[in-house]
Amino acid sequence: MKRVTVIRGDGIGPEVIASALEAVRAVDADIEIMEAGMGLACFQRTGSYLPQETLDLLEESDAALFGAITSPVAYDPSYRSPLLHLRKAFDLFANIRPVRRWHRTVGLVDLDVVIVRENTEGMYTGVEREVEDGVITERKITRRACRRIVDKGIEICLGEGRRSITCVHKSNVLRRSDGMFREIFRERVAGSGLEAKELLVDAAAAAMVQQPEKLECLITLNLYGDILSDEAAALTGGLGFAPSVNMGDGFALFEPTHGSAPDIAGQDRANPVAAILSAAMMLDYLGMPARAERIERTVTEALEIGVRTFDAGGRMGTKEFTKGFLEVLDTV
Ligand code: NAI
Ligand code: MG
Image 1 (spheres, helix red, strand yellow):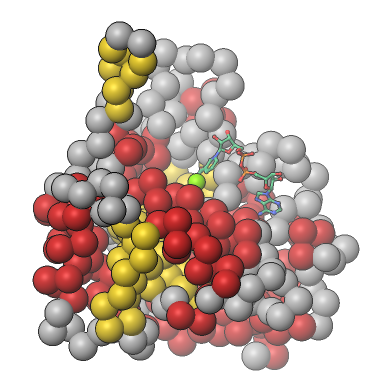
Image 2 (spheres, helix red, strand yellow; image 1 turned 180 degrees about the vertical axis):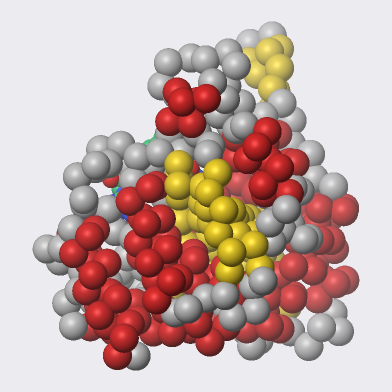
């Protein structure tokens, strides 16, 4: 049996994960679930944002399902983002966000794209130093990271029947670093059977709005992927509908793209669909594609009959939505 560690986290994290677990239960997924702590509430309880126990449980798991955590507002010198720590510790090198419109009345654009983003280097190493009259930010791109993110993108496209793959870069300006990424992309996609395309990142931002039908998979570096995936989520219904996974070689952490939303936490207002879809992706990853697909079909069907939270133009709170969702699930 596959083992999954569940980290509910802070804010709306526990609210949306509760719904996601109900969906997982309703499709009779054959998994063993273990609970672990991480984040601000965990720190207040245990004195650690990421206890060793949690790391140990994750080590023994096939996957993790994670809600969201709140960053401490006041400066805490002991604070290191536990999520960044996990990305490093488990070498979760690919951030994968499938983006599509789940119903014609949700979102603005008919985008159906998977964004595959390099997750370990680029602009996010945060190495900066003061120089006279300014700051230098280091941005390191390695061949190894380029190779494995491209290979992951190819694997996803072949697995999902996507025919083209688009490298998103800015090699007209960053000739050496982005130029290297682009070269590696061309070398590795050649012979894969996929059509290799490329776009400059600014053009890609426009293409998502103007020519969404031309995009099937975007493969890109850390910062570009961060920005484009928020744009893509906004175009297709917002954060409440945006699932994701941080994937490594033997382990993957599934999470809704959104944060802990303190502005609506505890008010029964969160849309749990992003968490539910993240759980569906997890079931697919763990070898249960039919169960995943059933959950996905339920999302569209629920929207069709008006089972919707506030952000999707509905009137349902998280709990009422979840109850409605499970009723629809019974019928699909
Ligand atoms: P956020 O994603 O939590 O919220 C942004 C806006 O979207 C808010 O108005 C929120 O109410 C709304 N929203 C988000 N998810 C929603 C949902 N499921 N249903 C309905 N509305 C939803 O981002 P924000 O406000 O910038 O960050 C809040 C906290 O979350 C911060 O402490 C931040 O550090 C943390 N965060 C954590 C992440 C993670 O754990 N992976 C990712 C992003 C932020
Ligand atoms: Mg972001």
